[in-house]
Picture 1: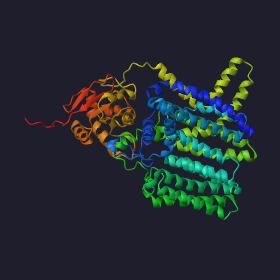
Picture 2: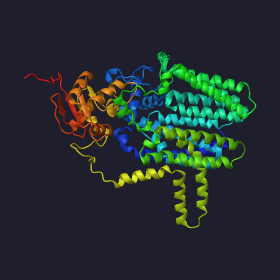
Picture 3: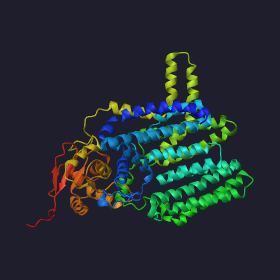
Picture 4: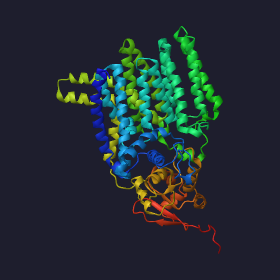
Length: 592
């Protein structure tokens, strides 16, 4: 470790410690009550627990959903830190082990992300600017959302790996550094194929760097070949017997063929050592076209995306309602501002830093500018990519913050100096303005325990945990809305029918058709599912769609208090609603 690197360690540890304390306190209620941020966090916990309980490393299907017939596409790589945390804390008891793990693992990813952002900034603008970058990480709402306690899904590790590859891209080029960057990208894609746009952007920027500086050839070739080789090896390790199974939603033979073509094409493009930048870029473009053509030839179905075959009802209610996968213009105004504010400021600040830089620093700023522009475009198209764009915007924003604070310190009036200092932080991290507005709006809005909608007959659930009272019932199959299925299997001894995972569209279709369809249809579907109970939470997004858009459907009628002779109401003591399915079900057309 160099002296400069050592000098930034203390600010990183101090900044992380303060952020960890604040975030843990802010999430204290969720930690105590085990309230998951997202259904995927509950499902991720179950994946790790099931593996520790003896489920095969290569079997990631969820055996407590749909009577065991519930395939998943997730990667075991994300389960490793969770399993380690659960195993190390097991002597403290299962409940404590789960809570400690769900706090510590995300905070470790936060520390890693802060260190990488600081490292990137240091390489671009020096140690002083890196300290400001450390301050800005916890001020990014969309970044902290993915790195706070209880957020154990894969997004945090994808951010970390993208930052690691970026830090290596901006390091002194060498074969070793390129190989490490390629391995980081291979792990990123193995965790989730949704990282393909940022991985392709990093590899593409590395290729353009070679086009500008041909001496980077070794770095580029090491990156693309280690990306291909690393993805191949990780696919073998994590999929095992299913190595050759085709897939569009995870690394599979088609995607590996594409990565192999990219490695071969890049090698051929650099082998001839073209003499001009334009010819080098043209050679790279040819390699890119061959890469895209390989995917089209080997796995043409993947061109339509993994959600193309969803049943209409699942697409219209579930898929369209998953906001993290939707474009920026479909988000609420406050969340859109929190997502895109920092990247836009970062683009401006990074462009200014590039114009002012000289020598090797100018090229590094140019590489980051290209990468940030690409990441911002991806974030506009897919909201969940916003956290990575925010992270890549911080080095530029840190230089802006340093310049603004320098001017603020020169103001003689204390009041004006304090106002200018606060303004500097808000300008350098504009997403905080939206976040403060959201908090203020929630604080000023009176919480009367009711939802402002017509035709209300029951109070809404305040939290998904309200439905967990069904744990006191004898173990059975719960027929419940899609979004609470993972919570049910993670916090009760019951099984559930469905969760929001596209490899199992039929259970989702059954749940949606039953809750939105007429009682006669629901009765048939619930009987066929083998469900013992029916349960749900009024006031949640999913059940509100049922009630609002399908007023004659089963759920809307149950909320209105209608009774059916095949459902026996169960007193829950909470706003959650539950019924026992009566078996054998009475005939819908009783004889006179």
